Image (cartoon, rainbow, N blue to C red; front, side, top):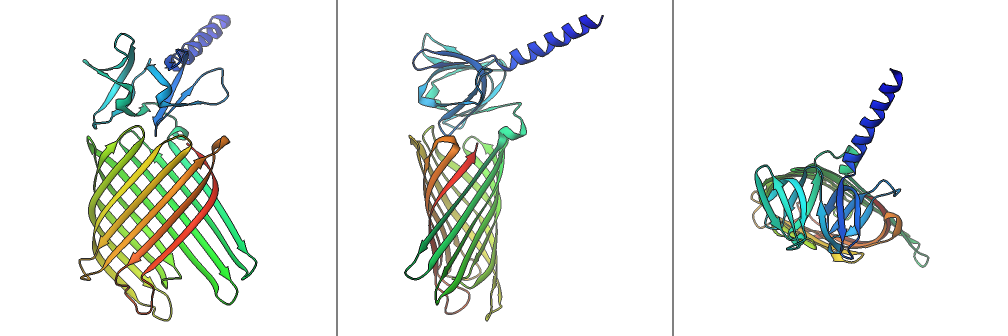
Length: 340
């Protein structure tokens, strides 16, 4: 009796393991690999096998065909989304998506993202941490920067946050500090459209700003959503509460509009590029515009390390206190690590 129970349990676990390893990857060279689809994101397919210590990371252009033995969530370039099974049709070199009673054939180039329906929590988390340091002996100038980012992604929504801290010290000048942080929530609405909400925080000794808290809400749209690049834009409303440091010690509030865009390009080998800019025209202070911009380039290294260069600029056409610079910017070079 005990032997039968052990044998039944063994067969059950074997069947469970086999069902998790029944997806098929067909490479551009004709190799067939059996394993488990983990995800497709930013032109990279993550594929797990039982004979490798870690997941394969395969350039999407190197994939000829893909099949799934379980339902996956597939996002297409024109905004459509299906939850179903994948089957490679060698006759016309397309992938067939079976969703309920519906069958759709698409080119691999039309698929921009794949999520599985039973991911573990750790598979939905993205984390990146980087730091940089520079020192100039002539004027005893030193700068330390640290940046962190975390993101949690579900099928129809994602929640993320980040922080960027820069501290600079120099003889006869003193220490200047700049701390920027944000929390963002995005929810797919239909096709390429999505809704977003979030908060931004900025503290800058250069602008005598103790803390600016910006709450925002709006809608966005993916104008381009392809394997190699994203271009998205959005409109919304925002409210900025500003607390200035001594000697002003004043508090200001501004009701604003929001217009922004973001461009991401990552189909360039190990190099990825990002440009983001958001403008806040004030409704309560006529003629005032705030513009936050960021440009960054990242070069991937082995073992999930990377080198990054970034430029962040904050502009305020009408600062709420006198004798304050309209702009504050920082240029950073850093080395970091990411878990995706």
